[in-house]
Image (cartoon, one colour):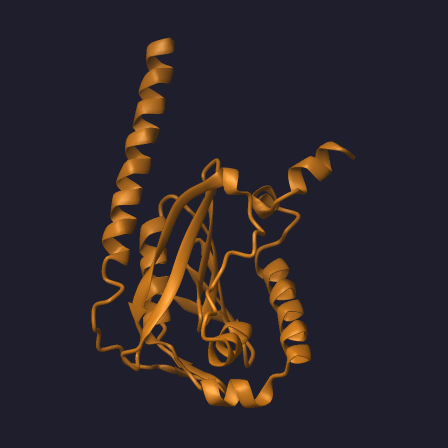
Length: 217
């Protein structure tokens, strides 16, 4: 029995190492110059959607997609665009929503966008049992991902591809959004997150404080 358990643990560790190596390989392409054909057009952003990824809903700033059994939210990073315009020392940062004890993968780097500009980003993946939650942030765009181990690498690579292929009208964003608008926009982000990835499901296990609050009830 102990031998079987040890084999299962060893197999799980090997699979995790393989996934990390494959993720590293996928994100090693962040600075590659790619010819990406825009196939979707919006008020503030034109973007490329891979043929195996389906759009579920969209408004002027937020979009939701599905890939296999994975759910993706893409938000234009309004506050990042405004801050990078007016504050030279502005750096993107993790807002600390998710339980760092469940951090499975982390990468920081720079990608080349459709205008051949170098855009800093970070990508954090959190794991709970067989479920993964991804958080990709750059000065231009934010992605939230909910997926499983089977889709983990391919759907992560598609997030990078979409980030590289998006073209955002930064001047229009800056002209049309004030600090109050940014607050309202963040509220919409949270609402979309709760709609596409219900907080009272397994996603709840990734959020800071949720487990302790439930234990205290």
